[in-house]
Image (tube, rainbow, N blue to C red):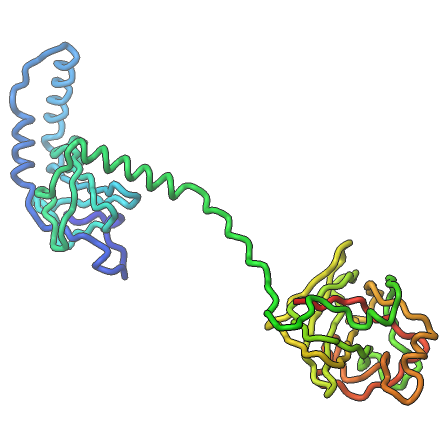
Amino acid sequence: MSIASSRRGRENGDRDENYFELRSISFAQQIAEWQESLSRPVTVTTPAFYAEQRRRMREMVEDEDNQPDEFQLWVSPLAEGESVEVMLNADGTLPPGTKVRRCEPAIYNWFLVCTNEFRNVIPERWVRFEGDGPIDITKAPVLTDDEFRAAMKEQRRIELEASRPAPPPPPPPRRQAVKVEGATFGFIPGSALAAETCDAAPVLPDTNAISDNDRFAVLAFHLPTKAVVSAVTACVRVPDSAYLALAIYNETGDRLVKADLRGDASGPVSATVEPPVELPAGNYRLGWAVWPTQPVKFQCLKLDRDSIEMLNAGEGEIVLGVSRGRADARLPKKLGEIEPAGERFPMPPKVLFKG
């Protein structure tokens, strides 16, 4: 006889230290005593008990020509885990190499059953496995009633804790601006140029030789004090996958901040800037473009034609204009030459840069 193929007690490729090995001992004496007890006379106490004994005697006579008795050892952990069922060898010994998965606590229930008679040869008992060497299961310490009740109580507590749903994760910490002396905690480029805001669909100038796919709008502004930018917010309404691309350039044309805003909601739409960027006081340019070219709307600074002409008049800087170098929605890393806006020019977006 051999270990039942479906319950070998050890999975292929598993580590030996995850198992207790059971010592290969003989149950021949216990089996012989059990078989002898079946043939001993029994005092009849009730008619029902007498009828049961007669039935068993008939079964024993009928089974005389059948196969010899077979015996199976069952071992089950107190904790959640798989039971091990092992068929004893013909001489009543436990097959070598029988293993039981280690559990915590190391408390196990075991019994020996005759599979032909469906009767227990050795009744059920709860024991504790101790040590790392091969375990003689017949000599493992048997739990007292108090020890068993305490172990069951603790196991029920563990199972109850495991069945409870995990608490929700804590909310992410609120982003904090980098502490910079003199920093502003929010600025809107060009806000000093307009007295009010409006919703408008941006239209790139069409009186310029630059192609629409290459062009983006630029607005010059002044930052009077240091600022840290870690988030960008605006009211944007875009269809499908379109979005508003934004960038801030310094006086030498280097791109310092970039962000994409998309959303279709009644409230503000935000994007984070990672890592936060510190902007010293000075002059900057805001670049923006919409991709793809769709009727995207955003809250904008309202400037009339006379105001735009005044901003770009004279021999000074071009305050509101266009530049080139855009690839789809990606604004260039380096700001190139700025040209005056054409007759049809989008109003600058009202965008809040903040820590």
